[in-house]
Image 1 (tube, one colour):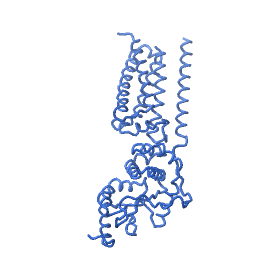
Image 2 (spheres, rainbow over the protein chains, first blue to last red):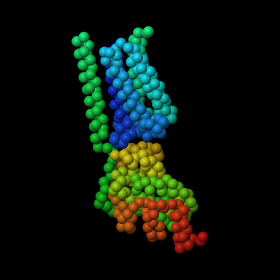
Image 3 (tube, rainbow over the protein chains, first blue to last red):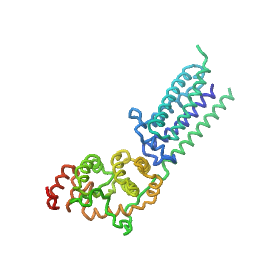
Image 4 (spheres, each protein chain N blue to C red):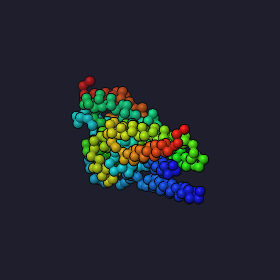
Length: 142
Length: 230
C-alpha cells in the first residue's frame, strides 16, 4: 500500500514541476519554452490556455500540490488504516484524468497543436489514476 | 518497524532529490539568457537605411502623405492602431487620398519596443509588415509585460504565415537595429518627443487623442492646397 502512495507522491511532484514550468512561462518569467516546434507556445498562448479565466497551468500547479499533499498524508502511519485517503485520491485522480482528456481534446481538435509538456502531464495523470485505482482496490470494503 | 522506517527515509530522500533537481531546472530556465535583444543607440551606417524611409501603404499618387512615428509598446499607439487606423485605412488610404508612412520611434522607457520594431522589419522581409504591425498592436497587452517578448513575436510570425525559420534567423541577426535607430534619430531631429506623432503637411501633430475624424479633417484641409478638387 505504501509503495502505491509513494509512487503517487513521486508522480505528483513530477507533474507539479511540469505545471510550474508552464505557469512560469505564462507569467513571463521564462522567455521561450524548450519545445523546438513552437507548438507549445501556440497552445500556451491560445484562448484555451485559460479555463474560466484561470490559467490551466495554474490549475495544474494547484491540482498537483493537492495530490502530492494527499499522497504524503496517506503515507503517515495514522492514515494507513482509514479508507478515506485512498477514496479521495481516487476521486481527485478521476477528476484530473477527465480534465486532462478534455485538454488533450482541445489540443487535437480546437487548437490543432500539441504541447509536449501537456502530453507529459497527461501521461503523469494517467499513471496517477492507475495507481489511485490500485490503492482503492486495496482498501478493504466495509 | 526499523525496516519500514528506513524505507520511508529513503523515499523522502528520493523525493527531496527530485524536488531539488526540479527547482534547479526551473531556476536555470528563469535565469538563462532569453530570446533576442536588439541593441539601442547603434551607429547608423549608410547601408542601414539605403533609401529606406519607413513602411509605406497607399497610392504613390496620393496627394497627402502622413508619417506616423510610433512605438509598438506605447498604449496610445495601440489604441490608435486598433481603433482609429482601420477607419483611416478604409476611408483615406484605400480611397487613394492618403499615403501612410510608418516610422519606428521606440521609446527608451519600453524595453520590448525595439524587439517589436525588429520583428516587424523581419516580417517586412517576407512582405508581411502590416500583418505583423497589426498582430503586435492587437496583442500588446499580452507581450508588453514580458521580460523578453521575442518568443511571443515568433509565435505571431507563425500565425501570420511567415517562414518562422527565416524570421528567427532575421531576428537573431539584429540586422535592422541600425535602421530602427535611424528612424528614431530622424524623428528626434524633426521634434518628435512622444508617440504617436503624426507628420502631416509638414507639421507635427502630437495630440495623443488623434482620431480618424480629426485626421480626415486635416487631410481635407490639405486637399485644395494639393490641387485636388473637392
